[in-house]
Image: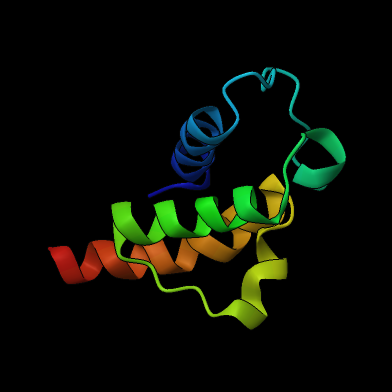
Length: 88
C-alpha cells in the first residue's frame, strides 16, 4: 500500500467517524485535532478501525504517531508493506 492509498483509507475512516466534517481541505502536516472536532474516543475509533480492517496492532505509546495525516501515513507505510508481503 502506498502512502496515497493509506491516506485514502484514513480519509474513509474519518468520514465514518466524523461524517459532518469537511475533509476536502485536510492539511497533511497539521494535527487532526487542530483541524477536526475529534475527541479521544474518535481517535480510539481510528485505531480500532485500522485494527479491524487491516489487523494492525498499534501500541498505545505509539498513538502520537497518528496525530496528523503525514505522521500517520509515515508510520503505517512500512506496516502495510509488511502485511502485503505476508499476505502474498
